[in-house]
Image 1 (cartoon, rainbow, N blue to C red):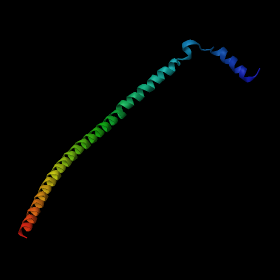
Image 2 (tube, rainbow, N blue to C red):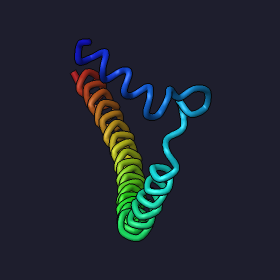
Image 3 (cartoon, rainbow, N blue to C red):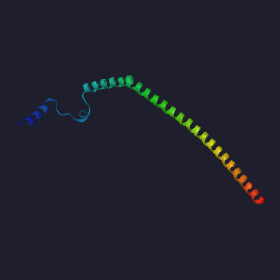
Image 4 (cartoon, helix red, strand yellow):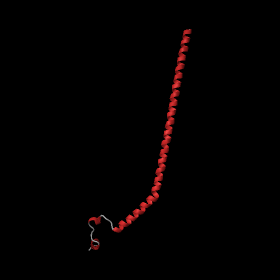
Length: 114
């Protein structure tokens, strides 16, 4: 008899083959220790990791809120600068039109004097 056949026969004699739901479920001791390990890990996460994670998220939220407020302030300032620029441009164009009209009037006077 070869060694592999001997081990298969020995295993079959000792525990028999598992069938049905026994193929899927682990032993009761493994379930209990797995549950204990899970509870310990969960307690550690709730005790140490969760508060740190919440604090990091809160800081990130505050940083984003601060950047949004800063962006709104910059947008408002840019809008004011644009309005100021447009007003100055209007004034300059008006002044240029006045100068052109004055130059035309002066040219017309010179023409009439000759």
